[in-house]
Length: 397
Image 1: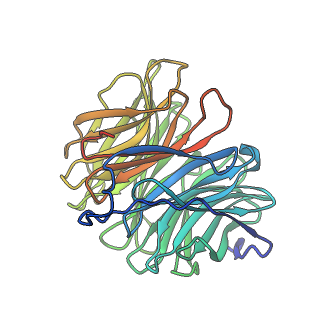
Image 2: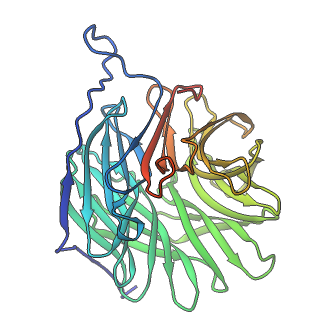
Image 3: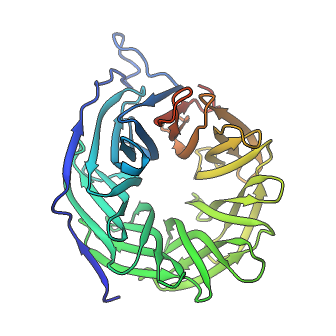
């Protein structure tokens, strides 16, 4: 691990783009202010290319979004976008770099600011951490990576000690890719980092949750000789990052792990895309902390599906955010799927602009509804816009 290094980007130029402040308010009892609508869908243009990758509800009922923004995809910078509870733009910040960079995961910190995990491509790919205040102004930034490798980040999650766990993928050289975990303190200080993978296979890390014992459970993908398929991959670690157990899950088709959540009962539910010769499905699977599968189901629906995010809902079921394509070669729509506590499909809702809309994240909101985040092009255009969909508890706008 001697090649591991962390440093701050000295020459970052922060460019702020002030958006027209929204007037939405979640104060329901005021006779002079309108109530926040239970459902809405809106697009946001920051630059010609604007895409949302991750969204979290904030402590005031609004939302924080990270993604990318620039004149085109190849010239994208990290985007941080603040939205009111009613979907109005409050402000947007772009963090400019001399190379390509995009936000992939965001969360609100205990001081009311935000932490962004970004994908940074300079001389090599690296994890880029950006900590901001409540107004999106940068307080500090750090890189996590090896000088002779390429790292691709996927997600940041808070830990019980006030720090954070980062997950992604690192290139060990010679075509050998492993999942990569990095545990850091509240100010980005390094605790440890670990690679997880087989010597004769390629792995990628997609999502991680802290376990009851202070360790971690990650989901990702492994690929190698044998079936020729990509397989779902689970790894349980101890608190110091050492491997406790791992599971390779052969779905009998090409399968890629995308997201994981911890349930109130202490189990773990994760989703993956499963592609047969004819269709693409979303698989939803539940494991306990000992590595035993409790149940597994496939989404029951028409067309092809891509799963992006999964969360347990307040009724004990689960919601999945993703994309649906009804016709081969046709446009995709946002999709919101509600499952019961055993993984049975209850309902599926789709939302779209009529163009190719791609959903990357979602969660249940404090009012019992749901928020979805991704991007959509304008009608007939080659540009992209941040696209958000807010629904009520039944998936209606």
